[in-house]
Image (cartoon, rainbow, N blue to C red; front, side):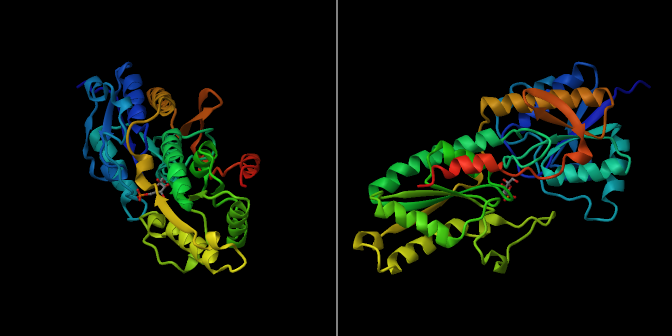
Length: 355
Ligand code: F6P
């Protein structure tokens, strides 16, 4: 009996604006050649259970305009249980899926690479609002998240200035400060703190005090959630199945705001008005991941999806699609998993604004 070719697609890890555009791109390019696309539900969990559905043109019509993922996502790590990879192999055979398109960040793509080494057919699509995957110039979702953060910081200026306050704004960015730096520079933050370029509390205070002594009545500090205050190791945070700490529990922005306020109040060399200085904090959190993607992320996601679909049709497995300049290319999955940190030149340029 004739059975059409079929590939699978899943979205794993934290959701990200642009995921639906990738799904649409992959479905359009596969269906146009007669290859079916089976959408697995909830990331690697779907690859274990087989839960999912065939995606039609109607299923993906217009979805590039929507945030989130129509397939659902999870942080399930199939490498944790002993028979995870074998279960996935069995499910793929049962469903007649010849290869899998895995859309995800370093955790999801790390699993895809392990499956590749075990002989499974996989193609990776890089995804994270954090923009910290190497081998691709940008990850989709980053532009949307940075624009949301920028708009929020823009708004904080007026209220901070009206009340002569310091406001600490925390952006996502588990290991790197791409979002904090992009949004912080765009929205005129007075100081941007990111994990790649540590600063001591003394250095932070030098800037805050100097601003006030020079007649600036307010300060906006943008901090990436992965920035470490020296005693962070002592905190007992929850971890997910990939060993990632839940940084939203760390309370970084609150702690920094409290420390700054306390230091200003206790420094008796400062004029009285500085010593009454109040600090507030805002954690932008999942707002940065929610809602509709920007045009850049819709188009980047769509083009990556089309390319991944074409590669699946041509059976070019073991690779990851990526953005290089203005081109969509394929790179070896094995080379793609290292972390991309914020460029030294970019941070140095931003530092010129810290005054
Ligand atoms: O990896 C993307 C990311 O948004 C990080 O910036 C953040 O630390 C993490 O996901 C939050 O994960 P969760 O949604 O599981 O709390």
